[in-house]
Length: 312
Image 1: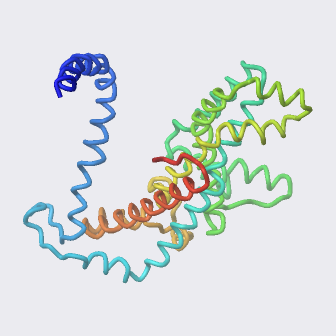
Image 2: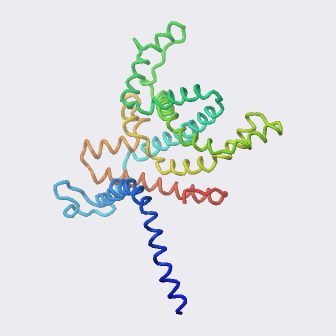
């Protein structure tokens, strides 16, 4: 007993020194921690209005409590099936085509051996990330204008007719997807390029000795080397599966394509902002969050079963 007490007293200064030594690291993560607490966790208390008939003048405490009535109203909504189908369609296009695009770009840039060329291409590909969706959509509308659009003028001079993606509902989804890829592909490749730099170069040298070409090196060395990053990013992306992006889809929306472009994000704008039905719009946000949470938990569990690390 005495020996244990002596050992405990002797170890206390060491633990205190350990805490003091790690104090700078705690201060380093403090701004990020405060960001998540203030802007992510504290606003979660606002979900209480989903169970109320919220009145901004009455506040949280005095607003009428309605329980699950708002949820029943959402699922009984006449356009709920349309909103759900459109949202899932855009989200599926995002997962199938946009998510792999930064990976392809990172693999291509990794194969460029001239450093100056690679840096120039990277800078050019990063630039669209800093352009507003208002500018991107406006530029696209100008280029594809039916009368004075530069692209349509060139197509008509070549005898190929004209393209009017904003006048037909069929052109909305490809246009939305191409704009997403152009705007976010370069920025999204940064993390994959960082992961590629950590792969041991001796593996490529050994593969060359064995007679492996560039494609086989990519398949057997490069992709397995960044597989853990791809899995983690995919799981995190599923958390925002139903986040289509209000600004982008709203700018592309018009009466001609409304039936294929109306998603939960635009529905929240109409009900929450225009109609001031805050409780109902909060229910839609909670529904989207629950779907994202279920997808993340399911994907993470599947990844762990397949031998990957997962998010947690």
